[in-house]
Image (cartoon, rainbow, N blue to C red; front, side):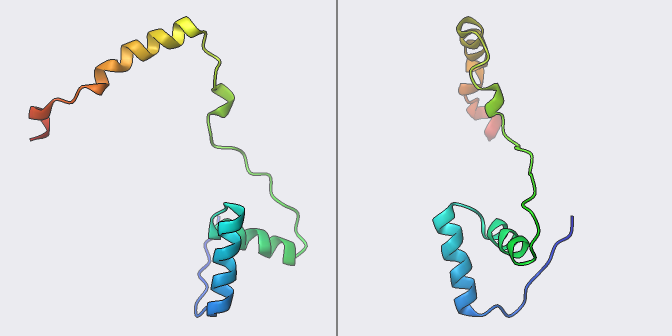
Length: 83
């Protein structure tokens, strides 16, 4: 991957990118990359998802309850350890 820095961007261009990012819920970086790909007639890249949504809800309830019970120990903070 390559990084690119754009210097001396006009205020109206920067504002347009910010507004597009805000309205689409994308980062400014993703907005700029999408605009560049569109302007250069390049197809959208398939970016693999980096989340765990595919694993959501795959544990049986009993197993999930057991796991949640086992990790409750991490809810307690040892105040002496943090001093």
